[in-house]
Length: 344
Image (cartoon, rainbow, N blue to C red; front, side, top):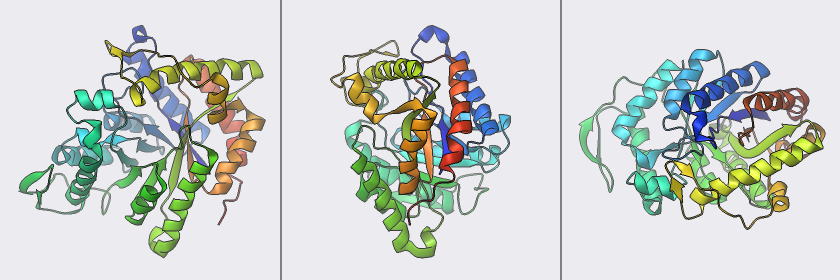
């Protein structure tokens, strides 16, 4: 199992500013490459100080200029918010400027607050995403594409320039439900997923759906992979574990507001709301602990067949502490996980 560092840009203190925030994200990416992480993931969110990155492709190009071999994965580009005729050309340009290191992770969107304010209500994001993905694939793989659908109608056109990576840049789909994972795998897409607060049975079902679909595909599915995102932070003491779990609880008081809650936002600042889930219950769903315990807990993921784990760990802590935690993980945890054999 390989590791991917999530540049989950979180700005709890608005006075910190976007310049310092993105400088931190670039520094974390450079640090990840030096430490042996396979890649980084880049979110897309607008109008809020949680996961704040309006253009993951721009950030991918910036990071590519500062690194040599790090894989650059969008997590995820929200297709219903974009016109695929414009976006397809942007993807090709980003793939060229990153020397083919781009992996285009795509999804339907998650936060009703931003989706509604950007004119694409979350309630209709599923059918719009499905059609947008079909349009995008057609534009990336074919010339003189025309369309007559529910959301797109246009005369023949060819995006320019043509893709450098053939037949097109790598595409990875974000999906949580096991039947959806199986369907996307059979279409030839890599998978990004997460159980969020789900029980362990969910992540096992997610992985099984991917592996079973690959098996049915034979050689065509051999190189497809599944990545799983979790909150993972390697602490150096029990006291730091307690402090980071509290920071995670504070983070989720904002995250829940825009993910499943009412979407109360003031001047871009997502309001922290009381949570029904206790800190103890939250801790069971996160991987915030010291290295020895982390090796034992994540070995279950490696054994189950996860190809790559995405470490989401920006919880509002100072940058220096974050870089130290990344190094602890790379030194004391990752080598053990890379030696765990995955189940057949």
